[in-house]
Image (cartoon, rainbow over all chains, first blue to last red; front, top):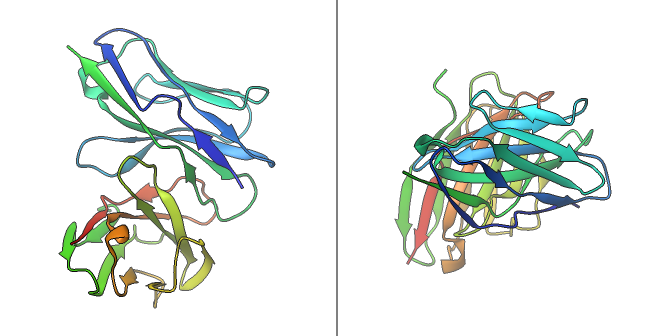
Length: 115
Length: 113
């Protein structure tokens, strides 16, 4: 079984400031790692994922996350946030190679970007 | 491709009533997942289908819950004898079987009064 801990339930940050949303996971097997974003009144959307290879993965809108196996972390970062980044962000894992790809989610972090 | 569609978007029901939700996945997606999200929590896995076969069910899925995907296209999730603890957002997602990315619908928000 896997578990995901998102250490911050809410993160306020000023526009154009950097942000880091923290995610730690626990698993006895290899995992795939994901960040999903949920904008107000919308469904979950995949932001980025780590399956294998380079431990640094990037999204098309400037977010990046780094897989750190020794620290069992997959923190999400953006060097300069915009108002439009205001949303709830969920870290998730699935068991690598299990076939079902069912996701185990953290509780989410609400990012509020302040003008 | 209009994405994953869920109906209804909102449902208010009295305790003890039965409710049924529908999910239409992205066409040609073989896999369909149901998740439940309660206030302040992340989504929790309930069950998934590959085509019409229900391959896995969570322990969260009590015997009052039943899900079907009769023709391998749309799916229904029924809750019998609803309880206040069933109040949650019910999310549906779909994917290709060999892909890790799941596409989520906007969910059905159930309120049991």
